[in-house]
Image (tube, rainbow, N blue to C red; front, top):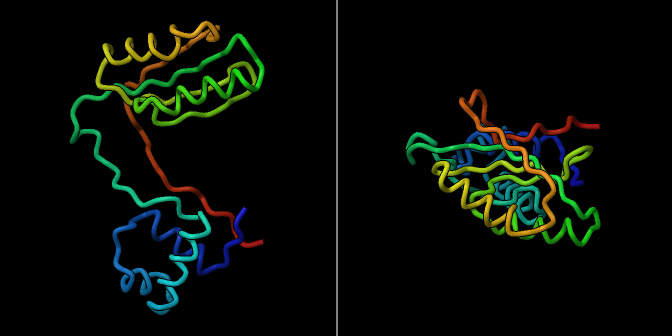
Length: 157
């Protein structure tokens, strides 16, 4: 875990809300000089605290999407089997989130799809093509009530 001081926390909190802000505006928001702010952002990026800066698209702007949450249980419970399944899932662009979970299910996946045809193709490619998937349980989202990419920052110890 990376240790953050109060200025780091303010910078990270501000950037999680809007990473397009200029360094000058960010410095004003976090009550630091522009030079200090720029240096801190570079350090946070180099340390891996800031993984990348992205644009989050509005789902409505790209058309109808089908969001599915799949719970996967594997037949083979060995580490190599988990790693092999995970590699296949990570390579699939339709899988937008993948979690190893416990107990009862091995993986929970969030899928972002253009429709049922794409879901069916994904099921064939990832789940049915391997003999290691024992059970798949999928739920389909009917409404998105909350979506956030912000990570709550730990308070100072």
